Amino acid sequence: MEREIIVPVAMKSIVERAGYAPAVRVENLVFCAGQIGRDANMDVINDPEKQFEACWDNLATVLSAAGCSFEDVVEMTTYHVGLQQHMDTFRKVKDRIFPRGTCAWTCIGVSELAHPGLLVEIKVVAAVSSRWFPKLEE
Image (cartoon, rainbow, N blue to C red; front, side):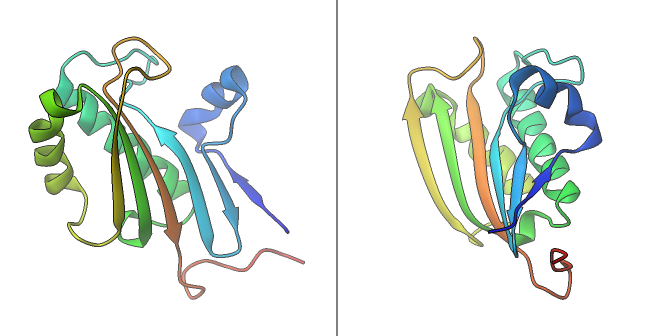
């Protein structure tokens, strides 16, 4: 199985520090690691709505680096701290940014995420049409 590691330019320092790939492409599937709401300085954003927006922005950056977009997402899993408390705000942001009803979505409440203050982590799998996504070289 051939794979391509996807690292957006803006995320190179994350990869060096944390040692994970933001996404991995295998043929026409792109597996994105969970994305969170941090700013360019790697600080967790305190305002829930702005944190959710940054999370979607970070996910869009990873998908773009892999040659795809939100429209290519076929499966999404979201992990929430304070699920009931923040779900209305999360849905409002999601519905404004992400196309509704276009993928399988599992939403999970968790007690904590990797860094204090994080409220959500979004993980997706995207399937890209071969006409848009060149085949890996042999």
